[in-house]
Length: 253
Image (tube, rainbow, N blue to C red; front, side, top):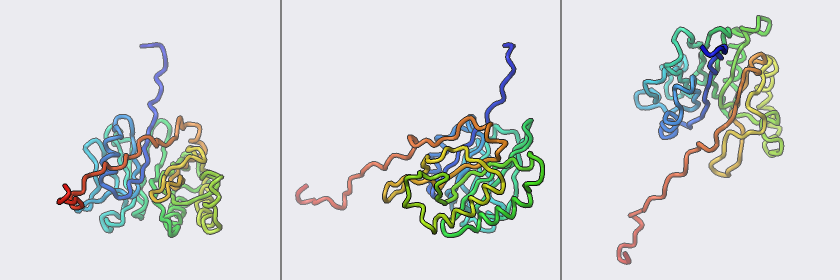
């Protein structure tokens, strides 16, 4: 014995939108150590011809409750490390292909993690979540009932999280669309562990830095977050240029 009380092991999770790309998902699996990370939240996962996503034996895959009835529209998958005891977590079933949820229990009580993909075109997923949370996490209950973490691709822009200098994002239409999410954050007393202004996406076409992804947690959980950051250094490198034999001028060659 070293004379010091043993500190609890931090819970670590990773969130990423792989844009349905098999290469991106395999790269994610290669980057994320299942002994270092307990949960992986994937939005727009790759779904293969067997209607399954890609993982390895170190992870338990959690699909949306409606996945098998509509696999081609699945936009959320959660991976739980096999190092997490099966007695310590369970799936929370919600009728949506855009949300997967798991509840972890321990000495801290219980925390529900919601992995969300919200479409750009509408807020249908957010409205479904609002109804579900009002039933499962009503504000009038005790603190344990309200311990939630929302992680995902919300596809909404607002000065509360985007770079305030990006005024071109704050159109009346964008602010109106974001109001549903802002109202949910206020209703359920959620806080934002990922500091405002940190981008989570570099657009392919213009290179603009945006914040469609976010993390929210119940206010009592906020002090428990040790760190919440992005890792831009791990972005995929551009593919190497290959010789195009079809364009060779063979006479000159």
